[in-house]
Image (cartoon, rainbow, N blue to C red):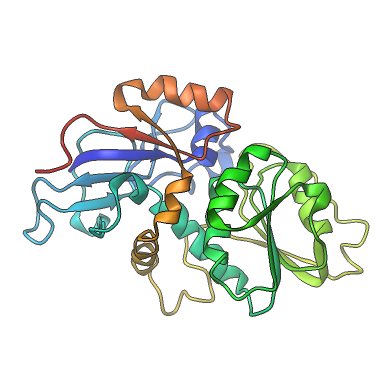
Length: 297
């Protein structure tokens, strides 16, 4: 494989960069082709798009997606590769892992016609969840974030962006993606009676307080964890992880997903790029890393 580009997974990779991986889940949080062990050094990442230079005839010369760390050339089994459709640009294709996460969350949640839904946290994961939900016949969909800069992707999606203080309540579903304690608390407040919160944030070593007092019990609320490592139970008997990733790649034929690409940087500048995102992530959604060489073979 020769890499064309890769994407920095903002949430998890920043936790890895900061050394905030809890020892008790270190093995389960390993990337598929990770090298090394925590706390460091590790070679981490899982959003790579490249060209098959040697391999099965049906894949040779094709663009593919692979859950591989940031690296210019590598060898993997053919079963680890997913074809990138001709209509999907290589930089957009790096979003496949995040779109797959969004698909799993919707399978976990099972939104229904006429639902009132809020997505709290308009980062990469929250934005992609909103992008998928915008096609559903919902009564209401709000993207909730304190950062006014998120109005640009929200407008591109045609989804209303609101400050947490102004978000509508009595929701049937809330997807929490902000990865902070205040966002979790506000998400619970936005739920209607017997409604469900889908928790997509992963906090690493942080231990957020969860407000289970107030109306949590009287409203009979539910908090459901959603994580992409396994197919959601509602689809697990009939879908594989390959099916899910293939669906994500098909959905990426929609050019609206380009709004999540907020920057390009050369592979040689990867350390500085990681540090820059870690220091100031207010504008970053998906940072793409470009590799030397022509995309064509």
